[in-house]
Length: 307
Image (tube, rainbow, N blue to C red; front, side):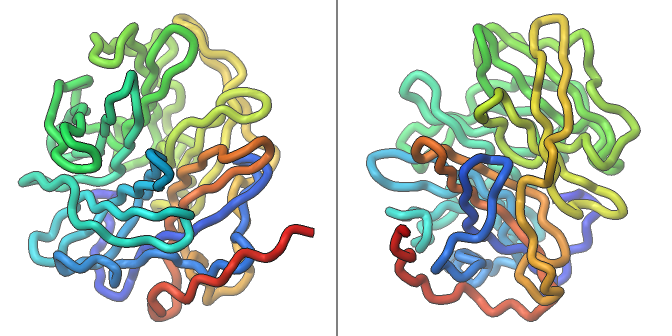
């Protein structure tokens, strides 16, 4: 969440399920009423909203990690839910709580271990956590980057390296930095072309995990004009080496948005977590902010039969 974003009960983010033939073509799933998860599903703390969903699949189950904005402590914690089909979710409690605000729980697997790199804007660093007993017991491993304010750290593997996008001006949302390491634990060093973007709040701030599409890597970005988290844009990375970086905007926005001004995500949406589930088939969790009073999650209907 933007550190200057007002936290107003009734102005809510919720989570919805989208799908499509590629991470650049995502729309609502037939038979599913979004949102599929809201603050009302959080049962162990008084939540104002949920946002920043990240999924990971293990043993036939989907695990969903997300920010829970805690009304009592006035800060973000990391919640967790599970699902067999990514359509109906069972809340399993807070998975990570610190004495400072957490959000953007980027979770991933590496060499049999499960890791998380959450945003901790107040701490001015990027910290790596490992699950000692997945999906719980997240323990800090090391600090990856410690050079000032960092928003939405987004690590990924490509080639023989680890890479990470960050937003280094979270109040302005306009600067994208790129880091590289030979190994996940580092050392991490800034890319020679970094910052990749400066002075552009429409393209800079990360909006979810980097994925590999049909033509290569895809980066999602928050369009923060005219205000924070207006929508999500996508960029196709054309060239990524130790010395060079190049990307081009995708031909269209990755997420279909309804023209209905009362839709659950009609006001804003600022996050996409897309996963390839089969050849030509992708699922994604997104977050959204709607004008209408929060209806809570609707009933889950059986999927429509294939034609």
